[in-house]
Length: 400
Image 1 (cartoon, helix red, strand yellow):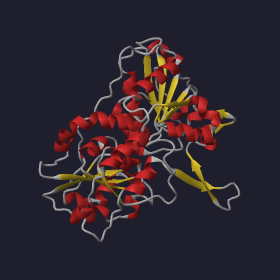
Image 2: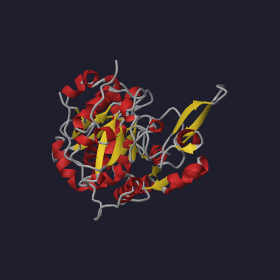
Image 3: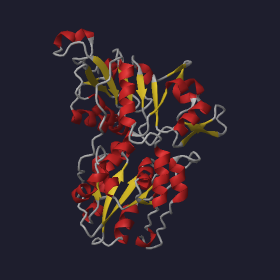
Image 4: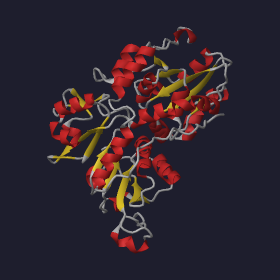
């Protein structure tokens, strides 16, 4: 069935419908919730500018998640069908993933949707198919197509990532922008609101907050340990601890909210609160005292905030040596199901400072660097005034 063609405020053919004329066009590409959430961190940098019109699209057929469509509808932007977005021309394209960026016309700003591009090694078969080779998300197979760099600006979180890029894809170095980590900057901006977040999460003055975090996939904490939530709840006295779960948005997107609630129904009845997939994870980390997590970026962010971390699952392949995720995995204790859980809780203040230095080499500067980069690509003068990142709002929970 042919997709409907909708009125596009960035298209010349629909210009006569526009109340604001002559705007620069920005296309936001949202293949999945994680990319969408990261790109929403960038959009406030364009607020109050009547020279800019933003539209959205969900690249297909790569990431046709139902939850992504719901996410886009919730935020109220103009959402162009993918077939229509591919025919347009844009002054700036914002992408939190490589998916589909070769199919659209306009300078692409590519930003990592996790804790940086060089956090992990993922694995794929060698060309011969006889063995497996590690692949960095910054190597030429990812960033180069038909001899050209795929993005006009590649946002890096750290000078260390730039050094990696120089080794694995030197052609892309001129396009690199070391901007720091906007998610971590928002975490630190939100820290003064810790008490408000704890109150919103139902943590009393006499309780500690334990967050259980899982990335997605069979190697994740939720994939490896189906009974993890039950065991944690059973091992903690409820008068002393509040337990909250953070599941990667891809778990919610693929399995569905109904199924997640069904799998965890007993835990929800026993007092577990679940953070929704599209908002609230940063507030939960700021509020947390301890986190039981895996190799996902949430665990690394928690360690960087000084939260006590227990590692519950590692990836199938190696982490890049010296990366924040690898340092956390090597430094924190591992959850031991046979031991009393409370006895395993420790906080290593020195680790937090060390991980902070690995997560970003431009602390509290990311918003300004990203706004400068976006306006350079838009060929517009940057608005006056310093960039101020907003703290996260108080979180809501899914409960029984």
